Amino acid sequence: MPVKLKYGSNQRTAALRRGLGSRFVRMMLIAGLGILVLAVSVFGYFYFKYQRVVDDRLAAGPIFASVSQIYAAPKEVRTGQKLTASFIARELRQAGYNANSQLGTFTLTGDTIRIKPGPQSYHATDGATIDTTGGEVQTITAENGVALRGYSLEPQLAVR
Image (cartoon, rainbow, N blue to C red; front, side, top):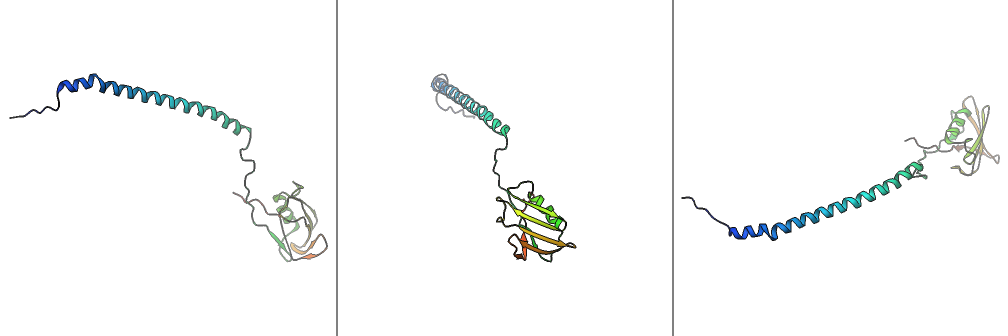
């Protein structure tokens, strides 16, 4: 024979549904919904406010004006090396010589190139004259007339 069990009285359960229980749950849902609407409103306000600020800064130009630059090791010219004066001039031009006198200048005359680094150069401001004949470096002379074994050219920006 089947047995039917009852948990608690029906009057107590009905009172909870009608009274405190359902009212409490409704109040909690309304409060939660109110907090959610308030949070979304505050987030939306600040999002759109600062979106305009960021957009204005991006439109004004580069954000990071002083970016890091990585330079390659400087090429060294030595006596006896197979190089032409026009090749050395091309290397200096790529490094920014003659385009920016603060960086440095050079003068190419036949097989001779005179290099004068500027105040913003990688080198000290000591220039040199490099004589090449037949595609080979013959002599390297400092500005003060001293013969040099080698001379480092301006380093170039490394390609990314």
